[in-house]
Length: 159
Length: 159
Image (cartoon, rainbow over the protein chains, first blue to last red):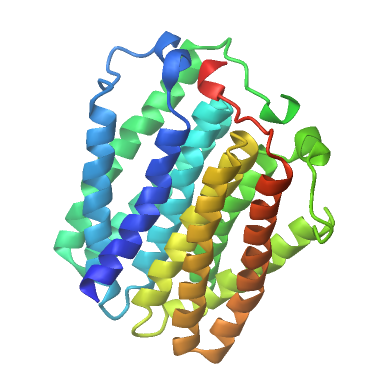
């Protein structure tokens, strides 16, 4: 049952990770102006893989405890918001909408971190790298709006 | 607390619903060949709004019960898979990948329905319209692959 929980949460992470494969950054992202502190490209898949394994383990651990409803509601919210961000940023190039999404994601991860922490110190700690990474992602999204004022959204519905 | 749970699940539904606004069907979808039994356009937002309210209420109800971990793990999985489908189908026009996503979504909704039912008859019943709708969506996605063999995927990364 432990394993089933872990695999279900990991499958949800897989759905959000699939957005990265389906909407890859590509040449457009390479050409964008970025702040000096932008993380190197290789770090993104490493960070996400680590985060997904950690939060799947944390979710599976607390899911078996009584009173885990709040933690798992935040878990579900971060999952949906995370799946939304990549298509909005890379699929539509709507950077301001993406900033709104990543803001919601940041709040969801903060809530998930606190709610997991209340159930288990380890589960809370497992969310900390995610909170740190989404903080960086939010700052990066905001900086890229400022540095690339001429980016125009794609309109796939008109193609 | 009741209301907080409901609002968190509804916010997750909002993230998946936003994909429908951000990746609207548009003229491309209108031109596609569709099976005779395709639901009318007006039914889609009505169905999704109803489903989102029902499953947010079901999630909030079971989240306060002991042993709700499995139901909420399936809830999270359906949320992530649901957020992924629209960008893949309408954003990338990758109908076969979208069929895989909606297949995962169908399994997640089936699992969520059973797991909620085990906790509460009403929570299980609240998931039945969703299960029926995703069954139709899966059949529709499959039929549209068959009826529109010439559709080419969009490549936003090359734009």
